[in-house]
Amino acid sequence: MAELSQASDALQLLDDRYLVVALDGSDFDQPFNPKSENIFQGKDGRRSCQIHVNALYDFLNKLYLDLVFQPRQKMNERDAALAMLKNLAQREKDFIVLMDRGYSSFNLIENCNRLKHCHYVIRTKAGYGAIKEIAGMSEQEYDIDLSCRVTSSHHYYVTHKDREKFLHLILHKKHHYKAIRSKNTKDWRWDFEGLCNVKFRVCKFRINPPGSADEWEVLITNLDRDEFPLARMKEIYHLRW
Image (cartoon, rainbow, N blue to C red; front, top):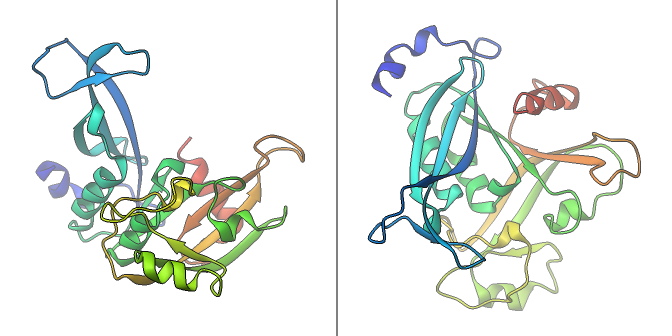
């Protein structure tokens, strides 16, 4: 990491400004050791030793910038992502991080909103299981700004949910909430105030012919609309593939 930091002036940048990185994770098997902290039991009951490797990859320079290793049984990709993004921000260079649907959470979005030098593009669900405001969008292209009202207070949620149609309750380990809720609000970690407006830009566009199972793509971002209009957002996210 130190050598990469020293060579950062020579790195290729998008628009001569942005590092373009992606976050993802993969599982790796290890030789079985019954005393290992990495023992993982699958749905079929079989036990193995597995680690989950979270990687931060620089597209333009074809470099791995950071890795976080976790026991497969205790993996938390969002926590690992946040740790790596905070490390990257210390380099004092603007970056764009591309993330898939598994990273979509209010806590990670708000952390990125407040993290210096951090610009993000997060793929998120368009229909069932999506953030309520996004699930309600009609089948057409969008490029809009959203502000989601988020609370970690069960009392506030219960007393205000009928008046505030799009109020979101963050799950917290100290409370007991409904078992069925959107994955986007199933976030055991919340680093901010009890009541918070999480703001982001939503880009929705067609990627397959009408009627296809995956007809629409939805991206959450804080990139500037003038600098990155909808057509360019499509190109930016395509880099990840």
